[in-house]
Image (tube, rainbow, N blue to C red; front, top):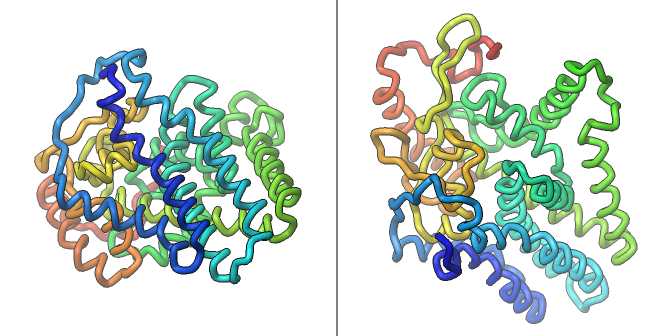
Length: 370
């Protein structure tokens, strides 16, 4: 997997920068070009190019993944320059209010769909520089605690009542969203404090990464103010809200209704591919650097994105469409439930025919994992 040509499809994210440039230059309804491209263009292309069910050799060394890794390493400076360049430009441009909102809605789509997604890839790596890039990307959308929550809570407790990010069966996104915003912040802080306590250190110890999170976020707020005044701060916060909404829509889709079997006394089965929804759609996986191969990501969290495996229906549940389509459906709870609830019930019959009472799983009433 050493060639640039093989990695090139995953570089399609760079195409959004000239698309955004056109939107900014033209103004008017053109400001909607970025979300339209991110959401619908890739969904349409998926319909033409189909699925990619091939799996790469998981023993491939990092040295042969250079061109794949490079796109995730170079995204932060590009996002930084683009976002803060627009924070300087837009308040001075002859835009109507709704055009300014439209431009930064598009920025939020990019910082969420691409920026947070790349941060997710980077935070899972052992390389310190990559983790720092993840922190910088997350600080730009004021969701830095996502790293602590994701690594210390979500991956450890996915599919159990202790994981805020696992959407419960029949839980609409409009209920899930405020719940996950509140619980994720609390659980991430408690997880970091607990790690420090095990070393006999208080939560305010300088080793608590929340100090770094807050410092980076404050630095970006200050930069926005210096470049665009209070309007610049408002635009930066607005794009962050859009990005966070994008992230949590994806989180909602990834594990909806999927729970690990409670073995008794607060013990749960190990995480398996069956505990995440899988999608092999080719084009949207180019954009999302294989995030839709989520079943394998939870099975092997430190596996780099080019090597993530896809699974058949006998091992992992399959989404009926890619994330761009499924996240749109999630915004309409009756439609979402009509599509997904029968699939969750089929998943339960396939993998857990011995469980007769699903009420404790549906309502998160099983004991918290030990």
